[in-house]
Image 1 (cartoon, rainbow, N blue to C red):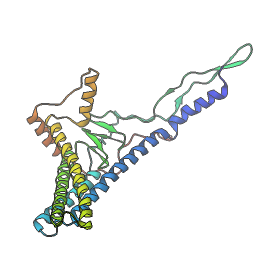
Image 2 (image 1 turned 180 degrees about the horizontal axis):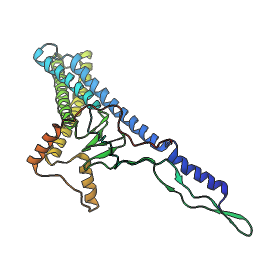
Image 3 (image 1 turned 30 degrees about the vertical axis):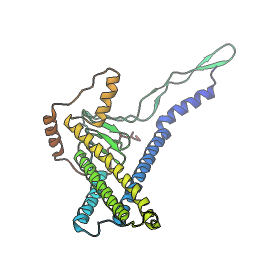
Image 4 (image 1 turned 45 degrees about the horizontal axis):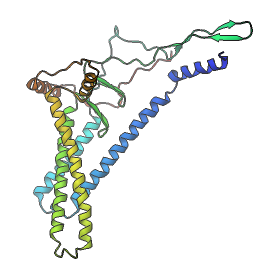
Length: 310
């Protein structure tokens, strides 16, 4: 037999789970942000380590302007692209619906029928009807190839992926800048690996007595060798991503669409593709990056409409 207090508690929990603060979604969002900060922090530490080794160890950077000018130019340009990608509009769809198509959000409430009391010969029992919930947040269906990003809380045109390194999505409007950032970062980190390797070679060449090497020289070699490996690993990752995105452009596909195609293939389902040949796909990409409305985004991102208090 169902107790009346249990029924009331169940109704309150169902109502509060939708009407009040959603702790689960908030926790998931905070966990995503924490993971994003951790990954960016680890890469930043490795980046600074390689940069310090390349600049302040015994390198040719301060002896030759032909080397130092391209190095610092690449460094400044990579920082510029990084900050540009953080604030640039990835293709947020903020088109407001017309008056005929506008959807009036409904208050966040449960359609609960009144409790019905049924009397038996010995004790009372309560029967209820399972409530039908109408979600308060109405998410508009975007155009083809768009996707709603839960981290950015926006509908992104030609969504590719959400990049934790730049803290923004990669979409229709910033894909070219993302490709530029990948190749510039790969070249810059390869340059750092070259400088560290050159410093290591010069330090190793200064050892005259192999049987009794200098402690300072050994320490310098022990510090420079990991920096070379770190720089090469950090340079390889954006280079592979750059090659992958070039391939995706040639087949007119995004990373998210590639994932959907692989999932559909395992389920033996069909997914629409947009591959019209390599030449036509490259022309479509060039037309994509020349759109006139490629502007900076504001911090007032388009979110799900909130219910009115009326």
